[in-house]
Image (cartoon, rainbow, N blue to C red; front, side):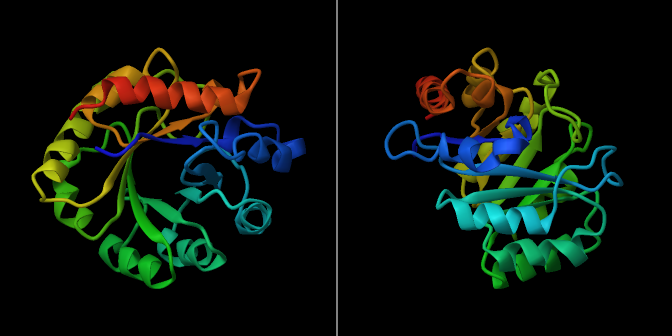
Length: 227
């Protein structure tokens, strides 16, 4: 199995020096992030407001680390394509918000991005398994979307295990990603369940050296991932 992917979430970074914060996890070597996770919130689908396409466009100009855009927004069928066209590596939409997720996945891929589908903690996975055949990433939310710093919800790991089995048996071909409450105390549970990509916010940007935190989380996950 490939090395675990670590995706620092800039939701926990200092927005006043965002370029520096991303650069701190973009240095070559083991301290380099695999993806940079960008949470786009519209104060409608979730009760918080963060940033939008113009900021993402600026981020894309400032780094060569792949940008993982997580769109917590209403009407992603209309807005998500712009992030793909801007150059985001992966654009994730919520199954609870997408009107036609299969068509949206095709449009995201046609625009040059990987297509990701996210499910909230209370959203069951089984009704969406056929839809996931059209996606490159499954993002399992391990907190309620909308705010950083929440506690990890371990019950969602059953969805991770289900997805892992389907990937390992060839029924799905996608990266299993988890977002919410990932830190040194929880990453081993997620790794053992079969997560490929770990989104970490305060665990990275709350550390004295964010790059070293990335390396430490990756090493910890690598020891526990299922084979």
